[in-house]
Length: 69
Image (cartoon, rainbow, N blue to C red; front, side, top):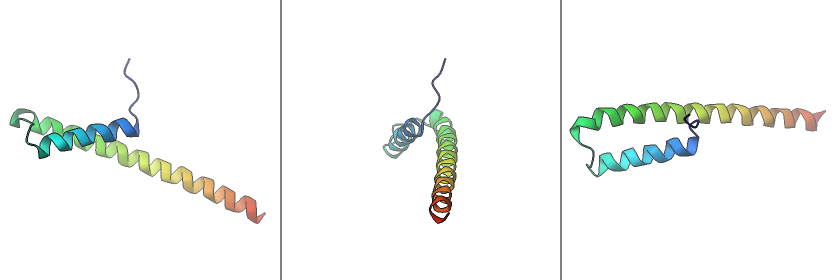
């Protein structure tokens, strides 16, 4: 069974893909596949960042309400 993807793992894979593309070590045959995977990883990371931002804002809001009460 596959482990759930973490932000760190997704980011590391994105860096590997970017480096391979920049170094031109990705063959034309797999370039589209790598770009598609990079797109999926970017969407995953953006979702994680949005969820984290929402959670942090909620915690800060609760802390502010608690200190004002």
